[in-house]
Image 1 (cartoon, rainbow, N blue to C red):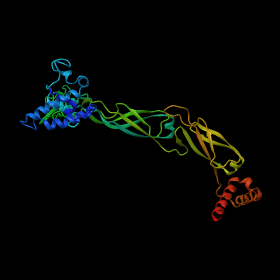
Image 2 (image 1 turned 90 degrees about the horizontal axis):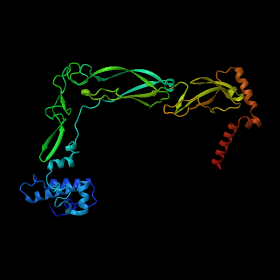
Image 3 (image 1 turned 45 degrees about the vertical axis):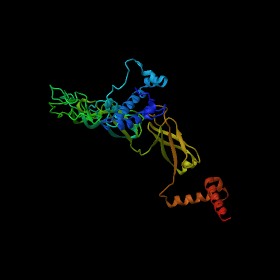
Image 4 (image 1 turned 180 degrees about the vertical axis):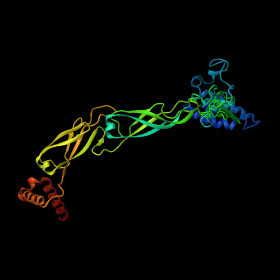
Length: 379
């Protein structure tokens, strides 16, 4: 065994991470590997030294023993006897750890299998009433479903898929390129581990067929635009008996001609006559549960908001009922007769003079502010 410090051999600090150790090893191993230095005994010895340092410093237990006792930890049967770890590993196996992510997995790579079926998306439009109260709808979804005659295996009834003779069911084969050992998808079974010698006549060996299936979807009360309902296993069936994907129902709530929704609250505009706004009264307001009466106070200005508690929406995520917010809009009369116009002029004149500020505080205040604004500009 070399007496050189293993950290010095790899050119790393004593607190180097495993990733830094692997990077240093990869660089030095490629430099001193015998295949790159045929007949060079010095390079071969350096390669063995580098490999030994790598094996110790990437093993937590061995590294801890080395940090405490140095080379003595591995002499005379240390670390479990028999000299432990020296020189027995194949170089290509070690490179599988270092380069596995680059070349497809190395010796740690998993087997490739038939993949789960694709997830599907279905866009569903709902009215506001349906979204608020909940509804059950039937939908038609074009998709792949498991083949009935072969049960999804892809093999003709009475037969079954056979283990691939090339990869022996592993789904991958190991290819050697110089001193690299690279795992690749089996070219015979394409990663499935099995081959179908006698395909099913219905699905032609795919284990699934195209079909439009009808599903009953229960939409819970309180959903809103952007909500998504997941139907597990209702997506595309996977190939060769692999599990099906999921179906996601994407909700879009159509605009309503009266209400606008914001979270759990509903908003609507309620037109009132000029006379009712001035003198007060009552007006019927629509809600999702029917009509209710709203009391309009005297001298109500346009744009005033009234809150009707508990007349909004119960969210699908729980919590209390939202409210209905009503915005009163004073409606200007149209299509007036000559008599009506004359009466309005007389009424407007009655509001003028010294009493104008009393009857029209916002109007008078606005024009006073405008006058001050221009006076300040010219001063």
